[in-house]
Image (cartoon, rainbow over all chains, first blue to last red; front, side, top):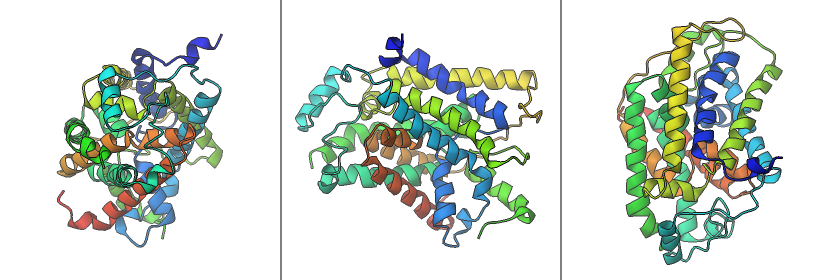
Length: 187
Length: 167
């Protein structure tokens, strides 16, 4: 019975479900969809270091930490109980490109050769995980939100600054994926 | 360290300008009311994994225009969100506790340009935005904890340098 749940879900199922998070959070407690803020709450709770940006009542925003804890639990459930028996299918052109970097395709969501503890000891793994992660945290806070807060909630509420941010996310991604990443993956 | 009620005005200003995650509720609830958000997060985490949104490959395909999947996901999510927000405004729908739902206009600042570009670069490298980072760890990719800690470090450094950065 649950077979159809195990296969990859199409975009026209996933997209509307994600979009429904916007009214769901508003209705159950007047909360605005946004995930990157939890990184700030973690700083405010653990390492505020007298920085004004981290001096606020993070406990009032703790719902956001429960929300991301849920995302983690949901992923554990989906990858165990709803595990897809078939390997991940990727675009042929991307598959060819990965071969040129000697990145084996393991049929998993992440390339195992890139996202592993061993890879952390290689230059390319270090750059991608540590510098990449740093940019995610620095950039989202500088921009005032990420894909959920700007691209989904911001555009849903017709905020033009969110449209600017979304266009910049895509611009930064296009430049990096096509020009920088090929160089980094050859390191 | 933690600001108390008497500083609510400042607190609100900081929150509304710098984070889109605004908690509009003035209701005081016991902590276990937060289980609602845990449940919502669980549903979102399942969708993230099953629709392969947390896959590094899907993000690379998006930035290389090799697959419509991510555009379909984001596009239909925005359309659904837009329709929902319109309905909430049109019929003045209230929360389950009877509070009115309010929206605040976001102010433009140059951070949306510079920060946006930097986040886009991080998104392309790691194949993840902040939500999917937690989901990737949940699927058993434990090394992503390092990516998450780097993201926390990035957020902290932004907070430290904030006054010196162009906004």
